[in-house]
Length: 113
Length: 114
Image (cartoon, rainbow over all chains, first blue to last red):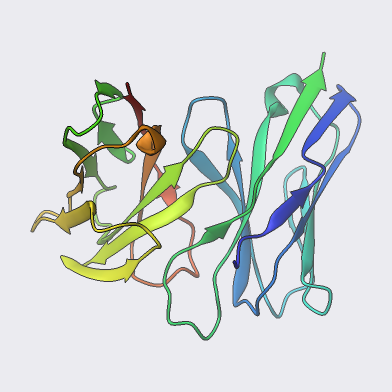
């Protein structure tokens, strides 16, 4: 399976702390994306990082990508209660001709006010 | 502009029945993808349609089918429903065919099979 895996499965932190989530995947990729999902809702795109990029920032989000280790991390700085959600990484599958995304199993983040 | 809209939001069916789920993409988006998300898991790819043609199919049985209309809206059909088909069905749209761009998701249809 090309599906990635996020680590940890669940994370609970205090408001104001930083949250780090990790993603590992199995095949070569063109890009990796991070999505957020509030309970019972659809996924919201957060950030896309291409395979030739090592780090990308967007507001309080910082994403790193290490293609040699087939891993990525998402850092949320100065967390807020509103950041409580599930976070998923998603990859394409270079060389397969597939146009879909392969999602990981998700990290459930709880930010305690 | 409206985002991706899906209908119905919730649906209850019994085993053996048939269901049709609907999706309207963001205006100007020509690609629609369908995903199944079982509780506690990440979304699993079912189909992608671009310019009214099937461009990708995931590892789902033939009971699952879909189509895309000239206005780029889409339907997902599931026949002979099984208990294991209970899930959140998500539709995502993007401007083009390739997956090197963000996908815009609707809030899904929650399907429960009794």
